[in-house]
Length: 331
Image 1: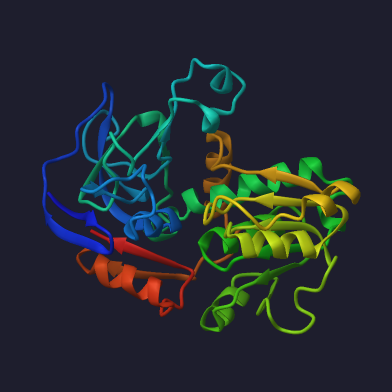
Image 2: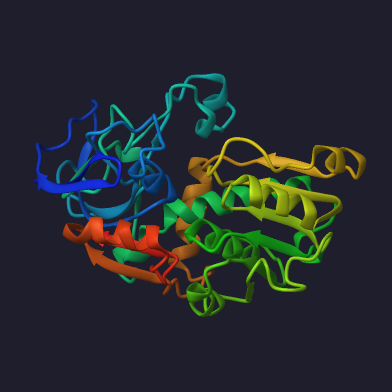
């Protein structure tokens, strides 16, 4: 089969590879659409020791089962596989399973390929009316769905009564904004420095998009709930400044490990900080259902490109030339 293989920093090779190895019970899915995630970009730059070269990246996939009793079924892929027996799994939080695995991280090859192996329990069927490209958004948007659920649980007022701000206009940020709206937020602001993306993001829903450096857009103490979908020290500093006393910061982004949080202000003004990692299987299924029934909007902020042009897509994202919040590759 063909695959896009990460071979070293800023290097991807589209070439022939062996079919993926399978765990007992796995089925093969012929990949029809697979999104480029921020974690794929992190690995591409050589910044992720968990993803050493050579490796097939990609974990935001949708396609068709090609063997087993459900062969021919159109599915979207939950890429997180947990043990189902540890304390976290028994509590319904397999995203925190200490031995969880995810495709695109050894020993599991990713979905930038013609086929990917996955346990059937992690596959959600797609209605015929939904494209593979839109279905592949279930994974990144589920991160926002999980984050919104955690933030709403901590907040002292209902979501519809909160002023909400999302930092970051990639797919995680846009997805989080749409999830806020789907959960009852009346309006959402989104901070994104790349002006090329503003029009497409604003058309996705009731989202007010602005430059974080523009006067008045990200004023101090101007939001009750802030979702940081980037995770750099500068965005954590912005979240610390923007959130109101008694408010909530939900942190999804994994851009940078340290710096930025104003711990003194968080303590003196009782600001809650919530780490949010991926999603639970129920979050994933609920997100997929919201995509299928239209609660997350038209989801027309995708740009599709052939997998063979994957290196060009990565280069465009790195250079800031990608207008769409999400580029999806088609094998």
